[in-house]
Figure (tube, rainbow, N blue to C red):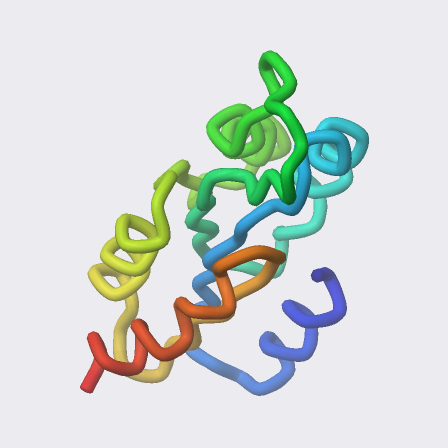
Length: 121
């Protein structure tokens, strides 16, 4: 993630907006602080719910909690959106000409690209 965002920053876009879908509860639990430190290059991060990949939920391990950790690490532009549609709505509403919207993660987030293009046309 850090390399992707650093590359986007080098492209000199206005602002970088990220739609992120964490993969698996166990991975999110173990990497919560690493994820929270990984988005410093992004101006805004819109968090979708965790893609479970058939794992059972773990109490307290949520994308909402991850948004809180990003904020704890000083990221003012992190927000929990839950659904892909809500994340797309938030990103499209915030994006200005010259900005970039990056999708990161696993699961269904790959579908956001086509939906974003349709919304922005």
